[in-house]
Length: 301
Image: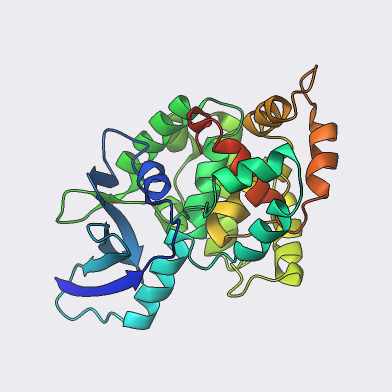
């Protein structure tokens, strides 16, 4: 086993409980394990089964440890730092957003002030983010977690810690759709995930190394061309996989419900009205959606 540990300072108002809650959604702990202020998660590090550990025992910092299978595995501390900052959401520049929002005298301004420091916990990889988005299409969070668990059990790889490492696109290479359906995927969702995996394995879809409007626009167009992947799936996947804060989550039921409550709307807002309201907050529309999620943690945020 090869191990690397680093200490990352945390900004003031960091929502550690959001991070812990996001990675402990599945109480069966097949791929993630939560122990008070510690999260352990099975991932692949350069195709090697690996355990990443976040220890929040200190008030102003987090200790991040990588345990890779194999004695001769090379671990670059700078790469670990980039991955840790990404997963923690520390690469999200929320200061300007909060300043702009709190300068206004609106109900949403008050919400942002109340939830100051909110960041979006990230999946360990873009594939994990998009596969979770596909699983979660139009079903409850509880049902999605159950399907995700069976998916990991079927296609994940065991780490000596006892946790399973989240499947990769390569894990699904050449498997029949029925194998996914056996874990709870609908026929349509199984086809979508296998198509996404195929595009990745064949090099037709390459995750961008940098996120700017040009690369995100190009990736969005590629993803929307895949059958079964629509605007909500793309916006959610970009948010959880790339910290892209400007996807519009107007199709999200919890976003619409909580926005209606925040604005004290006499009638529930539909997707079009929510989209128009969110438009005023570009380039932070998805971050706005996260603040609305946080009004109701049962929504799956």
